[in-house]
Length: 288
Figure (tube, rainbow, N blue to C red):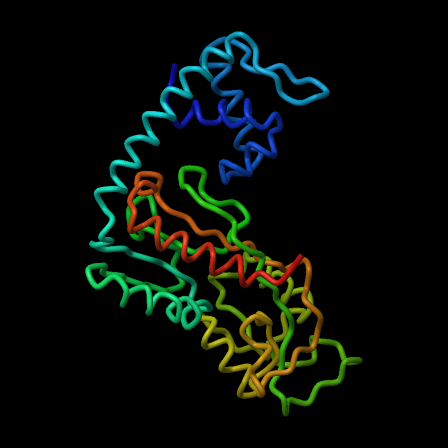
């Protein structure tokens, strides 16, 4: 037997019967499930599953692993309940890292939560650098990513829409090539992102560019007429100084994940804020 983190992949696949269903309940990519199962089978020199038309079925060796995993699961859950029961007061520090696009919206929700729990100290950072959860630079992180770290516990909470915008008084001809307009776009640090690659293709790398490093600055420059640029309708649609030029750009839908370090998933103050963020984002996701 290896450890609980390995065994939970076998347990999840045995209960769901499919790789994709197991990945969903584990909050990981389906390729991660396949890889972890294959690694365990290689380490144990035994087949754990047979693939049938009805899905993945446990072998005799797999049944032994599942029995041990269920015992470990009971122990883990029992310990977690004891920890949470001892931490009902919600006190201590919680460090949260969020992209600055969510500043006002998330803080609006966290403010009353903070007042309800006066012994809870919430620390929020929103710089453009990605917080390293493994080095405990944050306890909880909101992150735009298509491939979340495999060693973190997380949940994809929404797909954020993106569209092209301009200032209400900015002269724009829909028949004119987009390369003929000034652009407001992200700094060169983000040149590898899907958003920046899309802009480079449409703008044909025109020299008439204003580059920024925060979403707030991006919005301000577009609002004041510096050029056209990509914003999220979630936060731009009610701004009277902004006009949406395109429908939501499907290829630029951005996955948003809530991530925590696995060592912290049983800590009640962390779980409470994580659950608050998940509920907040799931209610915001307007897309089918």
